[in-house]
Image (cartoon, rainbow, N blue to C red; front, side, top):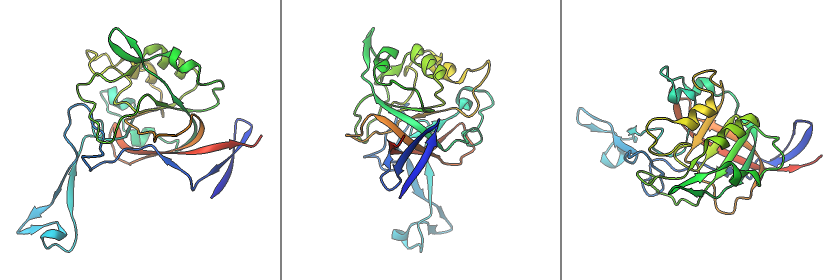
Length: 248
């Protein structure tokens, strides 16, 4: 299915039959990305009055409870409610489902023993900032990877400030956080991106623990960011991207 779209006076074509899924699997311990020391997704059949909600145990249907943490299990999207006392729901904050996105593959730099995504590492990748969403691939993390207690790479404040000034409203990355795993509770990058608490940026989101398939080229894409309608500061999400061909 081919569509033609116009954005900032330019026309593009996308093939909706050739989407690239950037989400990680939930509920399969061998494929599930995890962080923050949370266990794998727990799935258990409902039990009661001699009945077990499992076809294998004689039930006509499978009827399972599922327990997970949206920040620690798999790909998720969060609003500024993540750092607000009010815990504003991403489901209420997020109203922009299709945006133009740029995918950049950046290499972390060593800084005082940490691996840091710097503004300098990003500058050479993007010449024209004609998009609302920025997707960062920083490594090749395998399925089933657990980021807990590994001090993964994180984003420096200067990069966050710059992309915000360039009009980025949705930031997606293959890491568990834009901030350092252990930063003493500062969460500086989160606060900078959302202008929190002074003037919180309504409708702006951060999506973490995406998986960018090998061979996915840098460049401009149509992004369809699908967020499960949970009433919570974060929700499991499924970012889909479609290569854009510029027509004019």
